[in-house]
Image 1 (cartoon, one colour):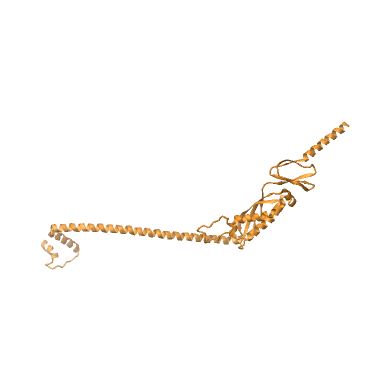
Image 2 (cartoon, rainbow, N blue to C red; image 1 turned 90 degrees about the vertical axis):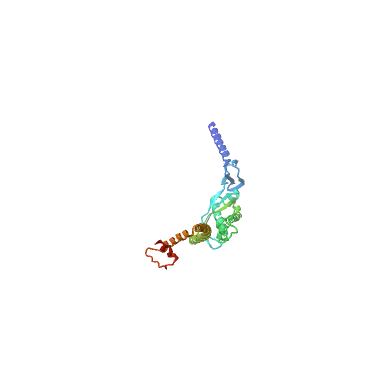
Length: 305
């Protein structure tokens, strides 16, 4: 009898321990939970980490992530409003904002990813279809420079505002699933192969045009510099020539004055020296000179005999 009682009390204690252990659960940080009873939710979601109670064996606990999660879609080929096809790779961050509604409408994160695929891809496609390519690839704070004012069309929204509009449109659809989309981002925007080469050619043509403008500007500045150098060179040469003429004129004047003084000192000697210089310049190796006997030029030759 005592043995039976011991076994009974031992089983009772074990059962009580199991009941007590099953009546408690620990909610970790970064998680939230919904208590269900026979598959139906009971009460509000539990979001505070720590030790919590539930009815043993009757109620179950379903855990959900409370942290921000990543949605990463597949790149899609989408036409823009100006009929340009692009590959658009989009990512988004989301979280479970209402665990109870999420459990009732979605149940698990894998199905949530599928729902977000449909919502985000459809919204992105609609928004891209309504905007030109330039709105997708340029940021909202883009400002044209003086060089690009006449060559690029202006933007009205830009990539940042378009992404925000996409997020706002998605946020109107996801609350019914207990999901909140925190933000949406374009990871990569690229042209399809048939358009990419045309874009490269246009980019090359644009760069060549800019290079030609720079080259033309450089040639103009070169011509201006060379003209200025030539003008300065002519001014310097003219000034030097004028000064040399002034010096030469002054020297000639002084020489003439010296010659005049010397001539006045002894006119006969001066006449004689000048006549000798004339002889030296007039007679060559095979020169013949015909003079009259009363010529002044012959006078000194005749006296030399």
